[in-house]
Amino acid sequence: MKETDANKELVLQFVDEECIPYVRDLLRAALSDHAPPRSHFDFNRFSITLDKMAGTAMVIDDLDVSENGSQSVSLERFLKLLDG
Image 1 (cartoon, rainbow, N blue to C red):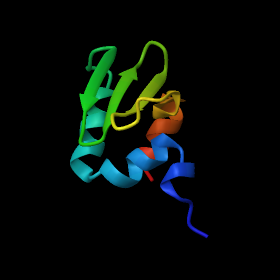
Image 2: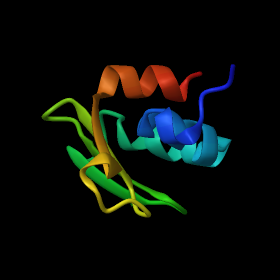
Image 3: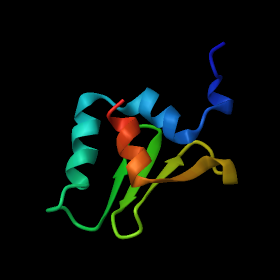
């Protein structure tokens, strides 16, 4: 049975809906050693803030202003999901 979007974690929705190769490359570059410690990106539906110092990725659903509209995940997990 396929999980509905309403029940799927925001980070998984982001990966499924917006992670074309260009977006994946952009996010990986933002996590390189030469990039600033914190980066923010606005995509079609989601905003992503990568914080290398805290080791987190914040995923925000710009269409959901409730407390369910954001999710923080470790950068390790975020990268694993990007790599599919």
